Image: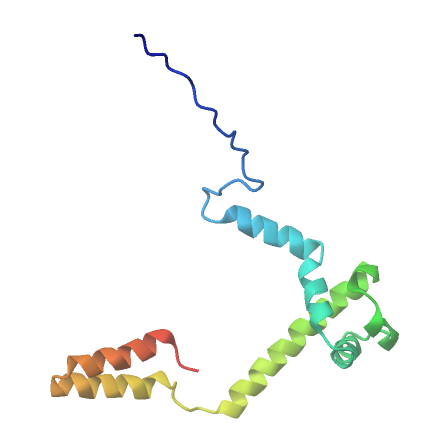
Length: 140
């Protein structure tokens, strides 16, 4: 009795739409830059904003308040650039204001670190690991 060998059918794999990037993420960065040039990031942000927020941004951009109800894609390029600059300016101002309001308080992780040091001084490594885990997760 002779045995015959038959090829099993296999699915043909199609290449991915986006090639894996062997250049340390340059492909993802390139895609993000293309999206930014086409104002897709700005359009997504604009869609999430309430009309009153849009009016505030337009006032900072010295734009027309009636544009608050328009889609960002229908606006001229100069208006979109002014809106992007206004958003950047306003967020920078907000960060500076928040920093001033917080004052010169030490970072909250300093207190957690002092607890960890105290636990280590007592020889309690379990407690020290607990405090270090809290620091690693981040403090708000």
